[in-house]
Length: 267
Ligand code: NDP
Image 1 (cartoon, rainbow, N blue to C red):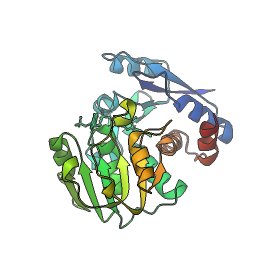
Image 2 (cartoon, rainbow, N blue to C red):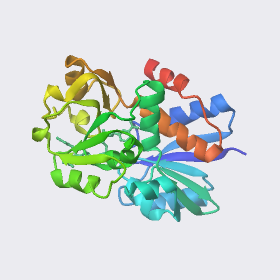
Image 3 (cartoon, protein in one colour):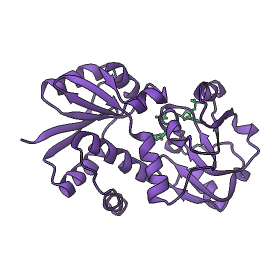
Image 4 (cartoon, protein in one colour):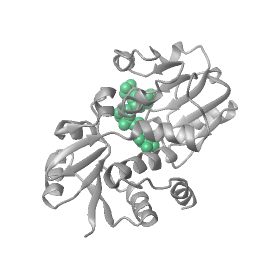
């Protein structure tokens, strides 16, 4: 019997997750269906309960419901607990028992290290933004030599660095950025509005990888990085890698990601 899965968000029309999971299913021979579901902004829990009642085996969760998903779970993966982010992007339904995981961090790390061939270990990393995405990925970057988090609202950057011991982590404002960094990750949503971040081009060290979590087009951050001589990447690979990890959690099978990234880039 076909096992049912879905991605829940609001808005959801733009989501590429159904294409990605249908491609994984075809590639691995797994018998699943996967659809996009628009939940009302005040109706996430009832949407999830309805899916459980209809026998869905799992779901991905996207903006703005990752924090609500965390609250709904009966159990959580070790990486969700240790991240302290309070956000879940993957739900597993076992006979009505909801287990939550977050695959954004491993998705980002796999894209940067495996697909782009950039080793994060011992590098100086700058994260721009301190919202849900920055929270979700911070733990996966702690092999770096140092991590600086710069955010428009400084208090949120200070909150994010609190309690991290495994790596030298500090909070900054944009206008006090003076050093240069080997890896710069734009985890703000400024790409959506073409907002230019107030960062100096001197932050891009020679050989720097500038990674924008947004995908689909060149953002002002990517343009600035390219003009400063950095290697530039968007977040499409991360999207596919986080989906692959969710697929593995659900099905116990690891799909190949490269053909799916290529399929989406060519579309
Ligand atoms: P949030 O709404 O939680 O956080 C938004 C962040 O952007 C905050 O740090 C906010 O700063 C900052 N920001 C927003 N507007 C401005 C502005 N005008 N100037 C400066 N900073 C600004 O969003 P998420 O963290 O969930 O998502 C961030 C991005 O990451 C989105 O574009 C999302 O699509 C992408 N993403 C991509 C994924 C992938 O798989 N490729 C996975 C997850 C996210 P402040 O705190 O001051 O408001």
